[in-house]
Length: 361
Ligand code: ADP
Image (cartoon, rainbow, N blue to C red):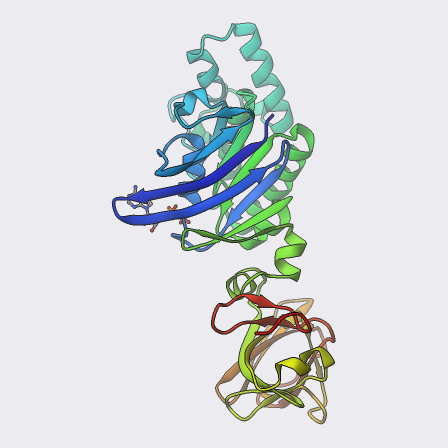
C-alpha cells in the first residue's frame, strides 16, 4: 500500500486541454472517488496514474517513487475497467492467474493468491467456468479478483459498475466497501454516478471541465458545496438554485416571487444579486400564508417513502422532496419554506460559495 501524490498534473491532446492542473494527495489506504460529468477529464486523470497516458506537465508519486518515467507494469497498480476485459477462452482461474504467470510467479504462490481472492470474492465454485458462463456481476468480480491477486500498492477503478443493472450495482457497491474494509488498499475510483461517489468514498474529488471544483468528504461536498457546479451536481434531485436580489425582507425573485428570508446575516448584502440554493429535502410544505415560496404544483412523483413535488412560480421551478402523505395535489397552490440554516449562497459572477456574514459578494 502507498500514498499517491499528484502535483500540477496537466494533460493536453494536441491543443485541447483535457486536464488543466490537478493537485491531489491520496493517503495510504484511502478510498478516493473522482466524480464529474462526461468529458470532464476523470478517466484521463486515472489513466495518467496508471501510466496509460504521458503527462503534459506535473508529476505523480506512488509511495516515494516518481512514476513519471515508468511503464504501467512497473507502477505496481492494478486497474479494473468497466468492460471487465476478461479473456473469453480462459477459465476464471486462468483469467485471475494470467498476470502472475507472465511474471513467472511460482505455481504454488499463484494458487494461494487465486485461492485467497476467490474466497474474498465468493468465486470459489466458479474457477473452472469461462466468462460467457458468468453473470455480469460475476464477471466484474473476476475482474476485481485479477486485480487483487497482484497485491498492488494502488487499485485504479474506471467506472467498474457502469455495465451492471441498478440492483447489481448497489450490491456491488456494498461488496466494494467490504473489500476495501478488508484489504485497505489505496484506491482511486472514477465514476459519473454521484451515488457511487457518496457511498464509496472517504473523500470525493468533483471535477468539471478539466479542473477540480472541490475535494472533501461526502458530507462536505453535499453539505457545503464549494461552488454552484458542485451544488448542482451532487444530490438528487439537484439542488434548487434561484437568482434574486437581496432586499430588506429576503430575496426578490425575477418573476415577482420572493423568498422571505429573515437571516440577519444577510443584511450586509441588501441590494446585491445572489444565487440561493435550497435542497429539495430542505423545503417543507405548509399554508401559503407566510411561506417563503408560493408556487403551483405541476407534477407529483411518488417514489415510495418520498414524493417529489415539482412546482412553478412564474418562470422559476422548484422541486421539493416530501414525506408520503404530505404531498399536495396537482394544480394546487403550495407554500414551501426552507428549513432554517439550510440555505446555500453563491456569487452569480464566479459561481463560488458565499457565507452570509463573511465577506461581500
Ligand atoms: P471523462 O472520463 O470525464 O468522461 P475523459 O477523461 O475521457 O473524460 O476526457 C476528457 C477530455 O479529453 C474530453 O474532452 C475528451 O474528448 C478528451 N480526450 C480523451 N481522450 C482523448 C484522446 N485519446 N484524444 C483526444 N482527446 C481525448
